[in-house]
Length: 118
Image 1 (cartoon, rainbow, N blue to C red):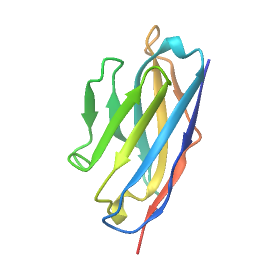
Image 2 (tube, one colour):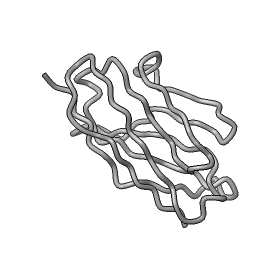
Image 3 (cartoon, rainbow, N blue to C red):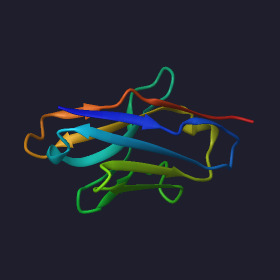
Image 4 (spheres, rainbow, N blue to C red):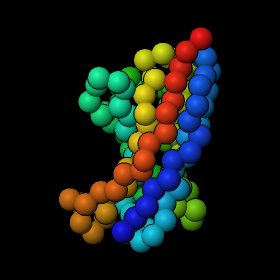
């Protein structure tokens, strides 16, 4: 089993920056691709960005050029640096980790609220 703990959310004005972090614990050797998803009120959860163990990244079109995902495999932590924040980025941000030995298995954090408002 893998446990994921997000931190770093909060309130920010439009145009500002925030960084959220996700620390993994437990059977961390099983972790393959990690990623961030978000869910706004009344909307479905959507992909924000993913990063493989080797560092290859993928982003939703809505955040390309503004958000950067990175990971520290030694610390078993994944980060999401969010710049030029917009009100539409307001959502609960969830960390996800896929089991590299069983791609059908993934783990989720509890989520961290990011609110962009003036």
